[in-house]
Image 1 (spheres, rainbow, N blue to C red):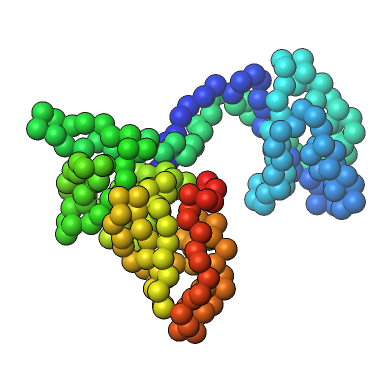
Image 2: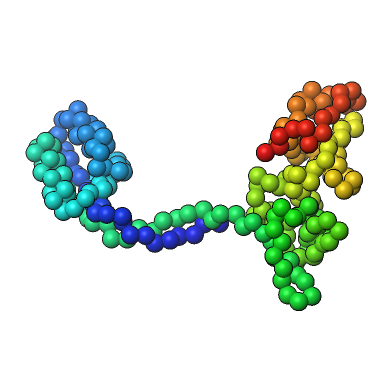
Length: 235
């Protein structure tokens, strides 16, 4: 999700819109654009079509600096310009990606409890609900796997099946048997990995098992011993 925040311009910011004369030599127009792009006071440059041909945003210290920029522009490139207009930036609206939450809220007898992501072992689907597991405890939430996955840090969790999301550090080992990969957790439980997800999950855990995957595709039984993920840097 994203949010939009307002922010002051952070100094004197001006947007200049330039319209070049139709008969202006193309090489000189290109040189003018290049000079503006490389000007240390110009922070954004945009080629446009419509009422104007080129737009810049300049970061200036004061009005005197703005006047100096205009004087330089008209002295060096005024013969190319048909029209220019200036607007001063009063307020910015900045769109930002929300930082992922580091916890889930789970129901208790007395209300809601905040459960940190590092305490979550796995999340399983149960019909119209999901169950959040942490050690010997679990909580049933009326939500979807997709919505829960959006709240979790993708660097810390893996969805190994449409009905199962697991914290990476809760994985103990991977076992391959004929065409199927199975994940074993630190509590001893196991779950098959969806076939379509197997290559990505194996790569994510940094297991050098390309040969095993190729034999799996041919239906051959693997002979190589899989290393424990605890022996591999999975981050």
